[in-house]
Length: 248
Image (cartoon, rainbow, N blue to C red; front, side, top):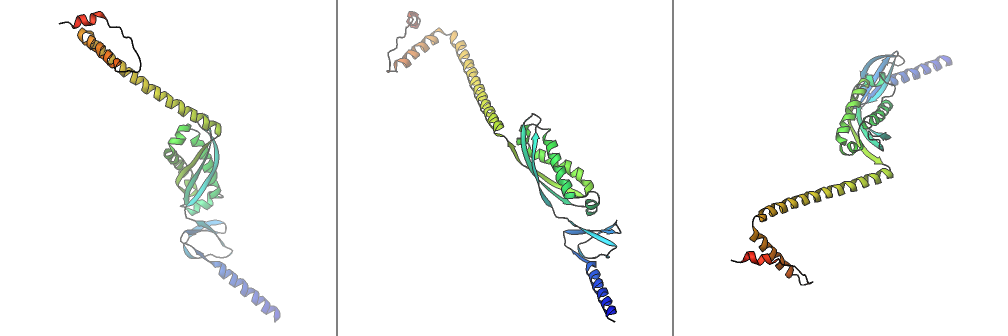
């Protein structure tokens, strides 16, 4: 009698445990990938779902967007500059079946792929592009990742390069380069000004060359301007023919 009661109690406990394990609740952003005897059966959820104990197993998949930091990567640009770059990746699962069946760990796989893609894409560009063309580089990396992760049921929504860091030696070299560029531009502007002034002087010389009286008047005007400066004594020779040509 005791054995029968004991056995009956065990059966009841097992039945309750099995019944409890049959029911699962999946949130709105969750899906359950169901396997029947090891084979894919279907994707269920959200809400209350029933799992047949022993025969079926379920793997939960979160459909919300994952924000993943891409670890800092050492990159050598096309112009042989060594930089350290990190980024942030936004992606989500759009096909739970593929995310579970096609890859062992889709989070780890996506992380590793993002690191190699970041190094590969940036290594094809020069440093100036990394600093000035981030939007285009972000789009290029996002396109490549989205294409390669599609087989895993992953949708890469966005990629953002956060920092491009240089070592101290390179920072000083870039500062010197910028200073040299500013000096070069200043010299170019000065040279353009000198050229324009020379053109004006040449034009004035052509105008005055055929008018002797105008030349002499300009000569006298210069004397008057110099005489106005009382800070020093200036000896300025006056050609005799100046007055001769001014006689009426």
